[in-house]
Each structure stands twice: as structure tokens, then as C-alpha cells.
Length: 62
Image 1: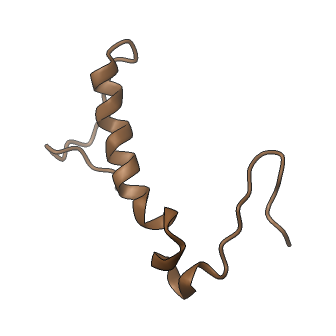
Image 2: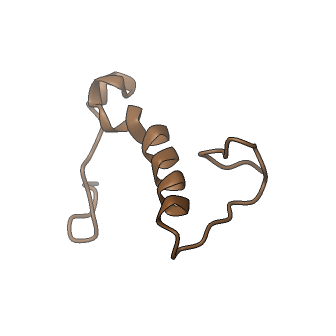
């Protein structure tokens, strides 16, 4: 079983204190870096032609 983003020390446990901003920022920065290629349509397979923007109020088209 694996997960992304991985910690710098590659431990199997994601541990942070929600009250500690730098702890949270570390993980959110890793997530942002991991997701960066998916935010640019030109880096997606097919140039992002199959990409659909959706959220809770706007589900994906069928």
C-alpha cells in the first residue's frame, strides 16, 4: 500500500498537529506539488480534452 505525496523521510505515517501551521503547510505544499501536473490541461493525456471540471454542485457529465 502506498500513498502520495510521500514525506521527505518516507515514513509510512502521515502525522501532523492541526494547530501547528507549519506542520499543515508541509503536507499541503507536498499535495500541491504532486497535483501540479493535473492542474495544467496541456500536461494531461490527450491535452486535457477529456477533462471535466466538476464539484459538489456540478457533477461530471455522463
